[in-house]
Picture: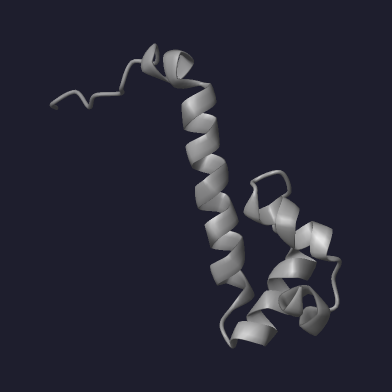
Length: 74
């Protein structure tokens, strides 16, 4: 409750982000960065990391079917 009040966003937004049901937007990242004295890119980077892990889990079989590129010796 304190965080949402201090940065001016609804408590439900914080709860949904924590549960993984809502993304960290640029607006939220800017507010969090100001509050915690770090960069908005830090928060967006966390979101990107989360998104990548989620996609890897959802598309595991599809990604495993992709053959890795190998360079031919010249």
